[in-house]
Image 1 (cartoon, helix red, strand yellow):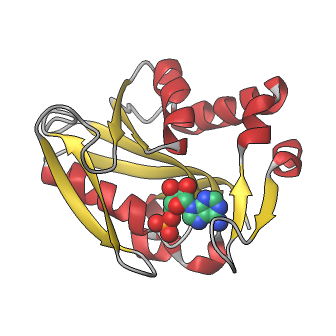
Image 2 (cartoon, rainbow, N blue to C red):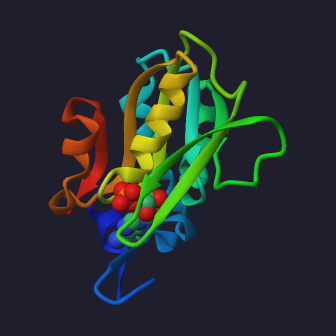
Length: 171
Ligand code: AMP
């Protein structure tokens, strides 16, 4: 995983001053590190009987799709308001300034399904927590949240419940 870490690019002051953005595009662009990351996700989750992987807009989609395929699970997507065409449920979460929301189709996950929520970066956990609430509202079983990168100093794992959080790399 150190080759993967070496390809994660720190971009200071993006998208706003004071944030060090973890740019994962070089990981995707390199065949060996892209494969290493997906293989690592697969090896962690292959024995957990995951029936549905939920990818979080937008970079979560990039990992959720190949992971779902490799696990033989279904894929569904949590999107920003107004993007999903069918009937949706919505959860609002707060940001440093203002609030945001994510939606799932009402039939995206079914009661009793074993669900894995996937995103690129865990920061404060507000985004993933909103998706967890959407999954819970549909009566599905949230097995875990899985990330490429966890920014440990922001406390996201604590917010989500440490036992439910997995990350391939921590900072
Ligand atoms: P949070 O809700 O604070 O956990 O933020 C997580 C969401 O924001 C994820 O979808 C990430 O892609 C994105 N994000 C937050 N902080 C960063 C960061 N420092 N670098 C890259 N992406 C980030």
